Image (cartoon, rainbow, N blue to C red; front, side, top):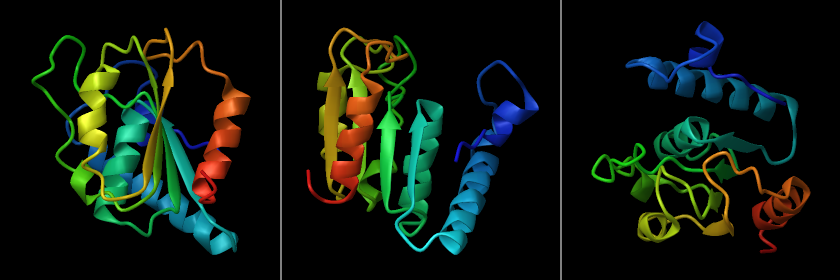
Length: 156
């Protein structure tokens, strides 16, 4: 299912504001809990940029929220502000995570991102998309989906 974060339902454009993150994670947790009640199998979640970061933060707060994460274009820091790292929660993430990141992402390069991903205690994998920016326009969606299914099931 697709879920639109509460900050985006409130405004069709613009970045999230102070206080949005907590509401967005609460909404994600509610949706994921509902899926758990309706579904006997594993529950997976994915998000792009801010949505992926909120999922990793939720996983750091509650490792039972879902069984694996697909994180597209993790926003390591604001563009051109490498000092504004968004990584404090990563060492608490116990949920397996597949990260997909473009080699030209202004929110953090591959070499910047790798050491922070290595702080995750959970099983994780970084897949790079050569020549792609934050929008991941060069992504092969079917290939990433197949890789995620293999990763989430522990076969990768």
